[in-house]
Length: 99
Image (tube, rainbow, N blue to C red; front, side, top):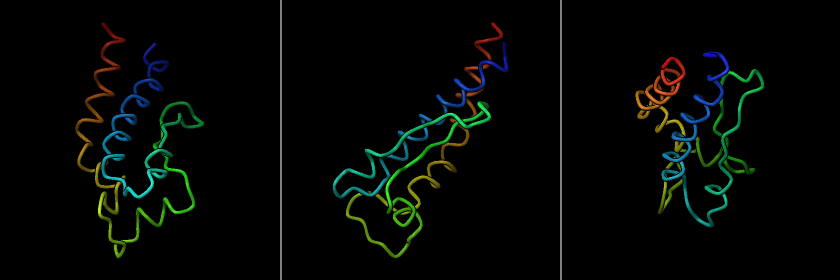
């Protein structure tokens, strides 16, 4: 029962991360922000936050780009800052299975 709850718990936690990251994602046309998604990993025990587009990686890692709205490291920074909340979401979801 606990193992079956892991995919949903991690998906919910990564959805939180996606929401925070979207607010930090550079904004010009909105395409990059709109391309974000959460998917379950192939092993079905985790989830991934994804930003599509040919320039998503450059927008993330290029520290020399200047953004009027948003920032570089738009996914990495929220991951570090939200680690406690992400773990709390997973723990809450898994605890609910035990009750």
